[in-house]
Length: 77
Image (cartoon, rainbow, N blue to C red; front, side):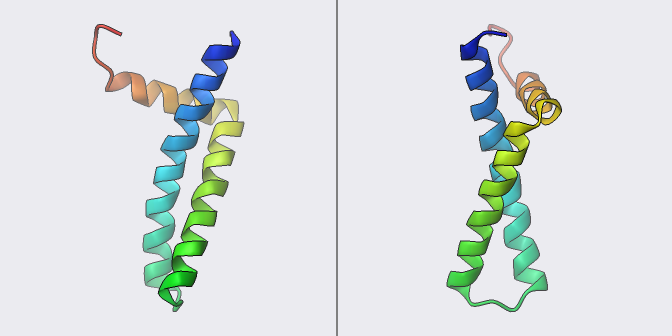
């Protein structure tokens, strides 16, 4: 694996798992916690960054994110 492919995989996984973490954390905190809106947004952002880092750090999750992205890629790629 060359460096460009590794960096590309890390960026894709970080974005994908970050968005999933952002949505899941927002709805989880919205329904389960009685927080102020500013605190909820800060906690949601922190959870999304943490999940994005974990998703990009674990090789199996990183490859899964790239595989899912490749399912929706045009055939000319």
